[in-house]
Image (tube, rainbow, N blue to C red; front, side):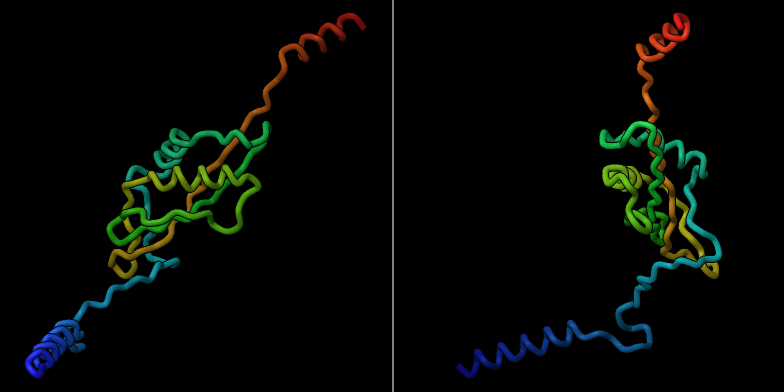
Length: 157
């Protein structure tokens, strides 16, 4: 019995010493900066440029069926770009738009983006936000019969 208690105590002290953090002189765990900066010296950018980013978003966005004809919806999406330039999160920036399906589609498309240059603060790469706009526009479909009947009516009147 005493031998088993001694063995348990030895394992306990060994595990405690292994899990202990090392001192502040750099011998311990490194402190990881999890701050997401909003003000930086150089903001994060898409590697291929803003025009390429907007074209990529337009190309990969599908029009939600719930969007009404003749509607224009702008969905600002806040992207979180980490220190390596990787997209880690995408959420609607501010309040949701009038079209919930547009918001979902904007976030979905934004999460597929890759290839960013990270933001810099004092010459060091930092985690930051980048806001991109995903725009939806659904044109009005004209009724071809309505146009011809209007013309006929004008001719006969």
